[in-house]
Image (cartoon, rainbow, N blue to C red; front, side):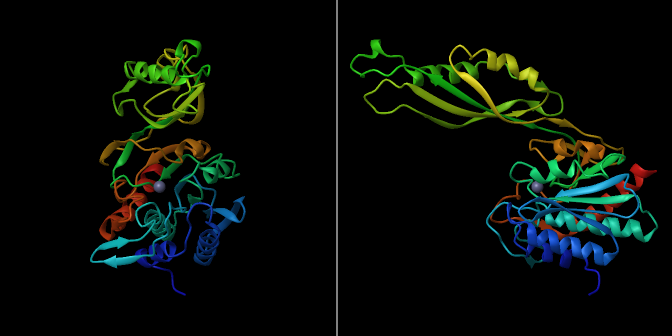
Length: 333
Ligand SMILES: [Zn+2]
């Protein structure tokens, strides 16, 4: 076999189903391919045959990193004109292929301090990144260049997530005598209305914190005053969680608040000469913090990721090779 070009490499990866939880085959293929190219490769077990693929030459000072798990459903690759379609074309196997080719170009000119960190599980809880953060090569690495769809722009910042469960407790009673009960649903509704009136943290790069009440449930029957009610609120955060605390404190006389998931907002390293933008999504970066100062850039649009129509421009992928090569060179200089 000859080394694969950009599109054949991306298509080979896309055509191996690596929906989150089923990344084993794709990881093993990728590890074998990088070994064939001449890299030292660790298949780092994450769970049930799912492996992170970590590759290096000399001890890495810069790593190019992304994930190779995908959201369902699996969609095989196809090329139409100058667009590459298929699950993972944009998020993030196209990126992964561009990173491999950039690292190969650097190796060809004798640069041996660039490593590759490809992880599983990004789309569901980042278990791959958490595991990769404990790899023995992480300490000593200076920069982590993470790849997610940013339309080729260097990210200045990404929003975080705080998922909070709100639980209200009441006392059941026959609905003909509401005075004998205490409605948990009324308390929950009052809490949600009051939450709307709270001032939420603002950040110059990311804008204002916003949130979605994504789930709501409660009560037992139409003719019973509700003894319990719950909602889940997902905040897209812009700074330290402490800044959100006053808004939650303002509703705690009505509901219990239980944090379910917390991913911090991140401010990233940028370099002169690259177009920049801030992004509303989260990435693996908070869980890879031992790999050095983070940068975030990748080809394609996050608006196409996770859609039935997922695709990326082949020209954008080619530009991404140059971007990763130029970034690594600048960071190592
Ligand atoms: Zn992604």
